[in-house]
Length: 454
Image 1 (cartoon, one colour):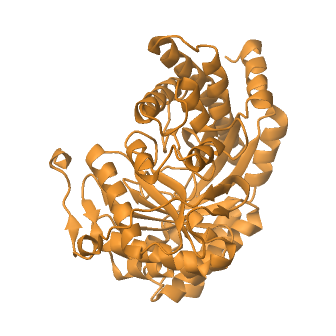
Image 2 (spheres, rainbow, N blue to C red; image 1 turned 60 degrees about the vertical axis):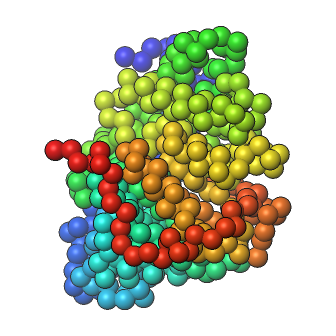
């Protein structure tokens, strides 16, 4: 039962500490839309999405009004396009038509983003997968709401280095295709290792093939709430620190559980998971970096940063798991640069580098996220960074991802602006030594020895 104390406490977190439900994401299976005729495929996809999601936005707004809980985004995730388009899409241009259909359907129902323009190629690529990946630059340039992802590795299969090499080239081409908007297309493209089937957060959301016809997943965020709670335990030991984070994460997840249950009931769609991710925004006071600094760092990037982030991530998950029977997705702490004012400040002051961010990804929820780099960066260097991050995910049996934005026409010392929740970012330097000989080797990095479990 929720008592009056919890109601008042939640109201305070919303009004004073930037607590919000970051997204209600409706997952929609498109497997029953598969057709060998491209026009019929697109018609089926448009009809399925618009019928299934027709009440998503209005229901989200009703819940906001009735409970006073801000719901920042309403989103859709669909079955990976590389699976549903294989029978009809014979070339990259066919996939671009499919992307336009997804965009039109998302616009019709009024959602912010639609995810699932995706390929799952952790072991090898089909011709259909290649066509989709080659289509990504144009698809993200001609659409507004479509988000794309490519899973190029897993602990069970290893890392598909052919896909890694191709993705480095695609990131550069996507940057070129959207260079008039500070290469914004790359902000909607993420490269994964061990991608989860139930992630509600963009740009990586898609509906996994193990899911049902439709599902509601909710993403909750509350960096400001955690930071405020930690002020009360300044100077205390690690036990008090950890208990405070756990208890706060529990309260935040309870809000997500409430919203998820209501959305599920009103839409007549099964509830999937609550993703408790401390996902920051550019707003002051809504920063993961500031939490780490409240824990005891002068600036994010200082010695001790990785340990502090590991502690935060683990306690957030422990608290969240106690508040809901179904916690999933990417639950933990996100460390995007452009979306976190504290991270931006740390980069500008020289405290935080790309290499330190990579070390932090060993213990955070995702990986190298929303990082702007010079537009002149070689595709092979981008592939090398992707490969490094995929190796961290593969060996540590965790989800890792890369969302790099090579901003065409800009260099270190300049700033790229993406708008809204995507924020802005200083251009960060990239190691200039060459890795192309390594990246151009063909084939796959084998799965680690500990993957052989049966």
